[in-house]
Image 1 (cartoon, rainbow, N blue to C red):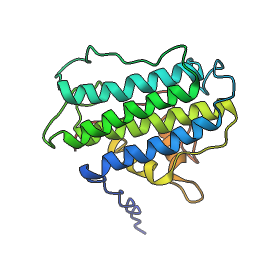
Image 2 (image 1 turned 180 degrees about the vertical axis):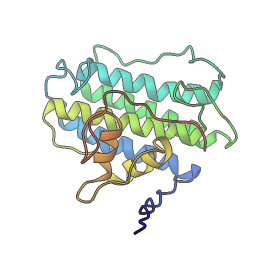
Image 3 (image 1 turned 135 degrees about the vertical axis):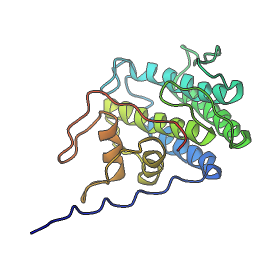
Image 4 (image 1 turned 180 degrees about the horizontal axis):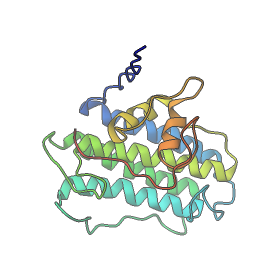
Length: 211
């Protein structure tokens, strides 16, 4: 008896370039709302699974969001930009979250204004504007998860946002198993959780290259 393998489920289409500024804005809103819930907690504790404190993780987010905007503006072929943004170390958490909203708006505006044929360097794949927006969404979702876990705030990444970044940055991601959410797949792809038959990953990276 001859058997044939079941066809792989169709992949979710990557959102069009014009959708990404809105996706980034939506990620910013949901993530900053969740982080604000924990503003009165101890931010000197380590973010879940990271060596940074929760407060230091906000600095990483500010650096990443503004850095992605800078890469799209400068368009280097083989290096990072020379601008490094950070948050006021003396500022209270709500003010730091304001800084992250500013950084996200800068990235969103840059993505919106960048021609579709522009490519810029990233160590995990030269990307277009949509790719850098997807990186910004991913950074926000993952590190909000890391921080809220450490602070005891109940929160999970939005499913539609997870589906969007999985389709753009994780081309090898499996279909989400029955009974699980797209957020579970994103967490498994990024070394934060396991899924049935898929252990927690010790190493990972996304692929920002244009396909």
